[in-house]
Image 1 (cartoon, one colour):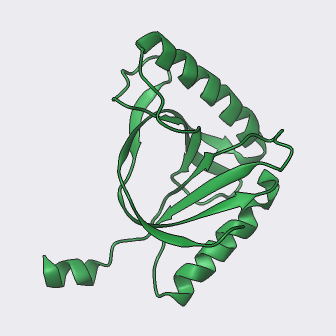
Image 2 (cartoon, rainbow, N blue to C red):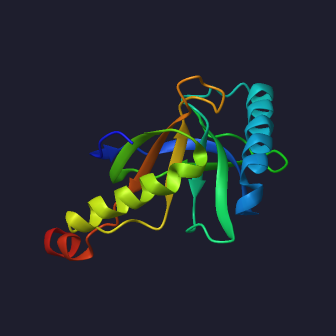
Length: 159
């Protein structure tokens, strides 16, 4: 894992397939979802603006609530299981994990440790952008983005 960076994320439109998936079925779901979304985007003429991503709306357990697809230049029209969605903006920590997907948990634990050391609290969602694929000779690179929960007291004081 590279270093942890605190950044301000810009919200982006996404085109996704959303499902609750058993963890063991996640790789197959992601592969199927990426192909289905890419096909729908090609039919609709919507441009992809970044690498494939998976947005996790729940903490992984036996299963996870996940959206898989691509960031896009414009909102996609619903088509079959394809839906418009977005990644939120705001403060987030990011890191690039190089290595097998089954070691991503180590990167998340390091990010959680960073938040704890810096008095921050994670939001209820996170996402991964797959910068290179599993067959990359250097190993897959995955950008992990974990938004920071808004400090309600600070908002109340300044709002």
